[in-house]
Image (cartoon, rainbow, N blue to C red; front, side, top):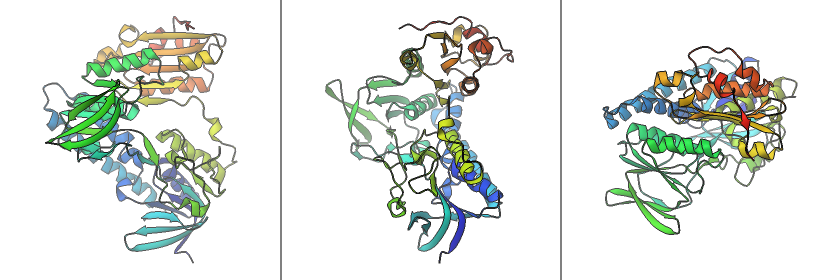
Length: 459
């Protein structure tokens, strides 16, 4: 007999899982939610990812040249910690107050298709559930090169680095690496990015990538492309990074290293094979378009299922699974269109839809409307706040006037890109956006000017 028998068991307290647990509990289902760490109540987003890092980005952007870097960073980290503590407590309370939801601390491991063992120290609990939802997320990937030293960090531990490094090397030129580069450069660190690839921001159009690169370099960030890191080690009071670049060897001395080389799914210790749950070659749980695993009553939501690693995708995963358990079952991942994302540089860079290469490959006749932020007369907000870097760029189907894709690299980009994504999902034309009435002064009103003079996209 199981110690606990519930309708639904959720493993992991991420966005999708916690939302499902609360909704199903309020609908009368008996639910148990298992989390291995009490420091992760609420999931990665509020504790180690989206919220705390953006709080640090904001704090860094507020530092003036005359402000002491170490003191400012120490205060910023304290503010970050206070914020996450409040959010963590509130997230716990929101589920604890639901009578039909049981919250359990411990590590979960499948012992059968419906059965899970939870271990916390010397204590063991056996659980049986009709439906199980895997929501264990991802963790920073381990580097493939040797690391021998105490000053190498991942995206979680670097948030509490002490002292603030005067010199910081970031291994990885992806969006996580870029956000931390911008952040630490504004805190006062001298930052060097080592990107294994030869093309900076390879998924972006060159004008967009060039604008982002110029922003970082203006902040003092140095960029090494085509760099293959061979080792990181502590040596004589400093940390040494050995790399190969351009056919030769190079050595960098630094005070700290951030290794940002991707993420891996947290699945290795779950005993998924015992339950018959299939994973792919990288360890991600394999799901169908309704997020069912190879075992029909077991679902996987959030980063662990190998989809786009965004909190808002995990929230949409919750909607899909909720529709399977308590709705018509019609909603699928195929319903997702025009999903935007934002890289939180200062200012942020948001994108949705096609880039130039994809638009050309689509076979459409394409128009492009683009303008540097500093040149947009109808958008005074950047000048008001003193942040005029970036550009806005929109790709338009010349025959339908529908938007194919857009980049907003500007103050408020994370908001404006959402508006453009909504327009794309509902077939609002570029002309309608151009001629709409927007508040003033705002960032949205830039669309009045940017969309006024589109030109053919060069072949």
